[in-house]
Length: 266
Ligand code: PML
Image 1 (cartoon, protein in one colour):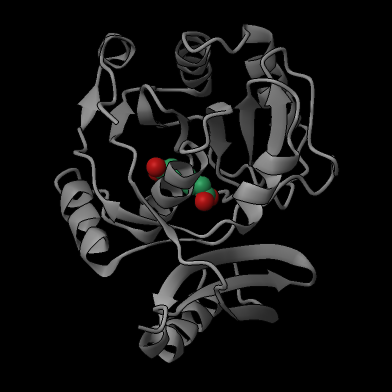
Image 2: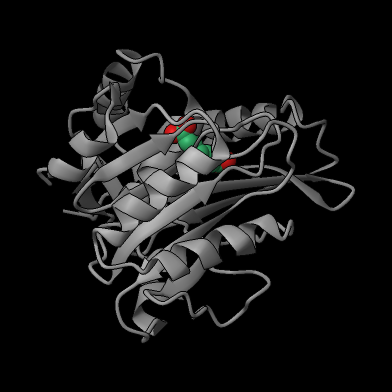
């Protein structure tokens, strides 16, 4: 029987060379034209402004995507950037990442230059990505149609069924399947989006409201790595196709101590 074909569809839009929006997924052939249309619309209607350049890539995948479950999602009741940072340090240090590394990640993001991809840091905060300006962009991830409906149902219970949260959960679920990655910090570069998250395999995807003040036009991601050898990891993040096919249960607002006590069950 011939191999079922999947396509990675990726969109990036910009205005005068400045990044506006991005999106991507893995789809069956019959969905290509509708997804290209949807991504084009999304780029044209983004509230950060009208894109003057939209790049869409449609690529037939040479490998069958690996199927993985989603990370479970919960939200902390952090009321300001300081509380969000303190919670990040507590959770990430419980999996062996030093407070100094978390501080370095916040500092690097707050320099104010949004990188295209993520920073890679060891547990002491030493940067490991080969290109310090571009970082490492995670690509070739998606979700099956059934899992997408299930994720919408789970997130919808807490008013979170939107593309921003769904796409971030899909990305983080791919990232944390790789054992060398111990934790992640993400702050959106959208000036109107002030909720970020941290993620670990143990604690799942933990949302942090008010991690930045409204109006700040930069953000970024940092992945904290066990060890220092990142060649295979970068290949996985950039090239290995992964699809979510099972959804772990999500929770609403929880206390920090619940996050620190509970295991993700993954
Ligand atoms: C981004 O893509 O800009 C980051 C989104 C972070 C989403 C946080 C959330 O609300 O769960």
